[in-house]
Image 1 (cartoon, one colour):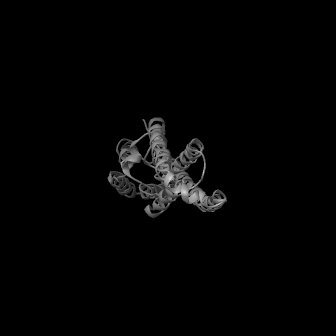
Image 2 (cartoon, one colour; image 1 turned 45 degrees about the vertical axis):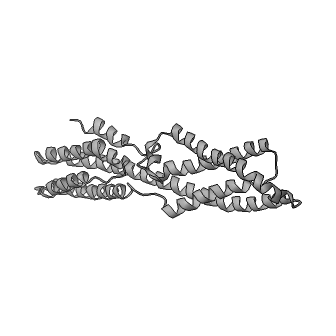
Image 3 (cartoon, one colour; image 1 turned 60 degrees about the horizontal axis):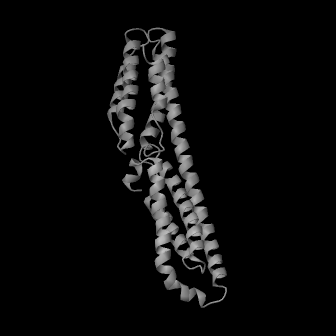
Length: 261
């Protein structure tokens, strides 16, 4: 999708969708229907034939749109669930290192707070622009080095260290999945098929022999619905960008509720 889609709000996008799809249907129909009318009227039952073709085309195209919409929603939900798991593992890791002997525990807590603050203030704005900042990885490596430098002295400390290391690995797994999901989305070739199919579907309406007012109404309704379906897929295509995107609210709640000493 073009970049400007991610810079507009829902109302503006809906207005553009109505303008583009309905305008294409009405303007194209007004210009080309008079040219196609002799061809359509020269054959009896032509509306029935066109209706059969449009129905067959609509089945395949509707199936394609439905599958893409489900895939976009599942991808969005998967990334959102992974962010929730990352925050949960980060919170658990913060609680685990809190019982480390001082000054190790305090230093590790400070590094985790710094990481969480960086994700909120710098990471998420970069995600919204389609960028992948590296500052979070630098802070994670600093935390890992500091944690591995800790040497347990008692059996209890060994157990705490082992559990913290296990939780850190779980946190790292979720964090890497999130980083890899920044620019995830539907392949460009599928978008070409969707857009071309939508305009072909609208173009088939021009072949129907009907009153102009009826055509404008029915064609406008169908075109607007096709546009809203494509808009639905577009706004969910990239989970971290656009008007409908995953926010940093889980990190913010964790930072302000549990990480403020």
